[in-house]
Length: 431
Ligand code: AMP
Ligand code: GLY
Image 1 (cartoon, protein in one colour):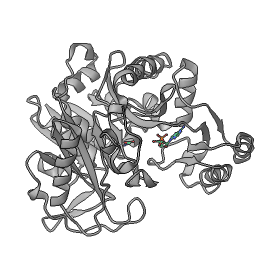
Image 2: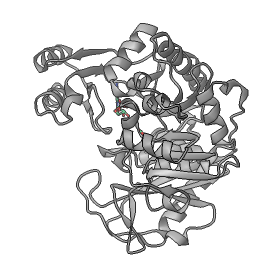
Image 3: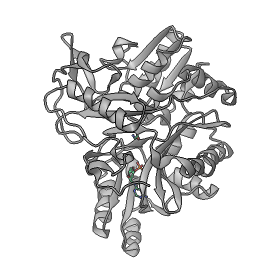
Image 4: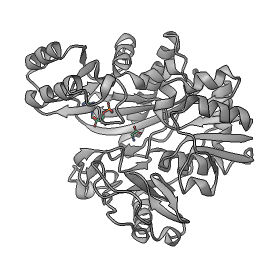
């Protein structure tokens, strides 16, 4: 089979890495890819947002399966466009990907089908949003309705902060038309977990629970990023939380989307808050998480391509999805200044010097005069699997120690929430 992976970040490197292990696969293309991906796939200079360019490529190269990494092309109809040409694609059509593309739509569907989530109200005028927020007189969360590269959510500790968020989104239009509507939500308290599932629209197969680290600094401080590291399996998402997430959230959501005329095929990602009242939905994504994909795919034992084909064709119930024992940890190495402004083009040293068992997934990297250089905010995801979380943490950080580039920074507490004592995060000890 010829497989095309769309995207060029750490998630896509992990996808290419796992797909390359499938005996079914003869050749991998990636558009646009990055320096690390170019070692295992043929990178083609087509942007992930270039729908017609991607369809042309898939037709020209007779691609058997296209795997879409990021949300933007999915919400803009890449899967629809591929299917219209008779091409097989892993990822939901636009109508189903809208569960990520519109936070209001996601809330409406959850309300209609009784899926646990925070109470909310939605507004398309700043004045009304302001009146509502003043009436709340409590902390809340203000969200731009549309896609905003993970930056459109503001957790407001006070009425003033919430009003400032409405101004930023609706008046300054910091996220453009994504801010035509705002959703104002009740603030949920608890620990977050990401539970992703494969689904063909009927059968739902959850992956191991994973945990992202969104804030830039140790101890969950500082501004949000795309994700500074992740690990799996996350104990906070195990046991009853896992079964509640499957029975009360994932399965009902897939059924609801089908009932709404938005049949969902692909990976459904749920960002959950584990509250006193059980897991509640913070967000849906229509794809693998980045960096959650890196540890998850490292732990996946089964053939990913076999699973993906079953998702696309229907028949996921006939495929075994198995996981390796142990745990995996991914530590993201970022450019100096990220998630604010940063410079690119610094040479990356030590990539060949990581210890055995460590895989360095490239995110924002490029090639300059035959050298690997930084080319984005999140640059690398140093990932390792081992028999348990503490060993995986140790191994991943031994890999981090081998790599360097000017301005490099990273969190030193990835995975520690899962370790007794909570490490440097200062979190209470888990029972
Ligand atoms: P989202 O993109 O909707 O997941 O929001 C990004 C981040 O904002 C989440 O990972 C949470 O940390 C936080 N967040 C979103 N909604 C809520 C909520 N209702 N209560 C508390 N935190 C939230
Ligand atoms: N890691 C969060 C996301 O991919 O949206």
